[in-house]
Length: 478
Image (cartoon, rainbow, N blue to C red; front, side, top):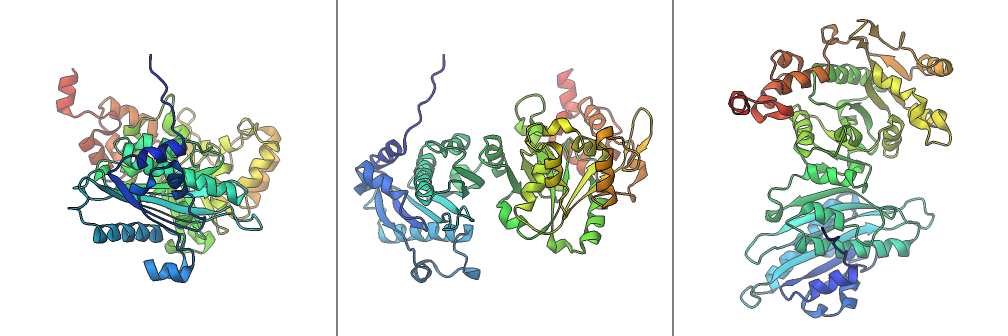
């Protein structure tokens, strides 16, 4: 019988750190008071833990300490990391290691803005800790971005204070288990009070941590709705990538990526950029995988997840992982960051799902509410044709069949160019089906290699992705 582990309160965590004579560091908090360090002062025994606590609130004074920021932006990741490293360098400069044997130094920092007076901007910020597991080891960092959900400045400050304590405690006591560290960030904090939409681990304590898997934990645990990472595996703040950009996205399982996926993407993107009259520099392109797609019939298979995103990364694509099962939620999410054009490349089968009323029973306005969010004035569907494997009929926007009661609504969106057919598709790809490719890979049949983009087959074989077994493995298996 396993025992449920009791969660510690912020006061208990602060006291545990204070009582460890080898943990010693500084606190630098900007924008919401000194909400984290006060927990350590109140817990007792802080004199041997806190080297310094400061709040360089005035911008001129802050610039005098940390230097000026481009465009005078202070609530940024760059500012936070600069604060963390500057404060650690001061500890190293001013304290002798010989006089402080065994001490593990750290710096904690945050730079945030809380809700404004008119309550039109909820507030957000960057929070991080730079620390040592051992006095002889280099520094590691955990940095995260938060968005406040509470409508009161005092409540947001209290939440920030609790988060800071959780982060420092997690860095020292859970660094060998990053998943537990992430989940512990919400100890004494409700999911409805705070969103963490980006997290980054670096340094020797996390040498074997894949930040994409850590991003996945955020969405899986309901801490955020979506995360984005680059082909190089770097976690990105959605606001930084999507703000005032044209956005073109393709949703799929990508298990594995096929020539159909790439043809849909390339043909749809070309049409989108012509319609939006925009350049690649002005456009963010995303390949989206939903959590429900990753889960399938059970829990998420992390190896399978990495297989999918590694193939996409190898092709040079940026990936977004979301919990938006319904398309209208994805569009609504994008619209929160940009007022420019949004394009979605999708197949006929997916469009039929969009017109399925069963998906919108949870909305008070039903399918009309969903369509109001999905078919916005700045959004267009670029529809890729589908060849029915049984009838061999090519389905497009002109001959797909929606329910009788939705036909006029469908015609309205088509007439107003909210649905456009991709007519320049490669007809030789019409009989490529990802499920059949996946079956062939797992059963070690040949022939699937020509149905995936160049280089993908070699990657799958070299790394044994999607159940592929090489000749040695097959002999051992048989």
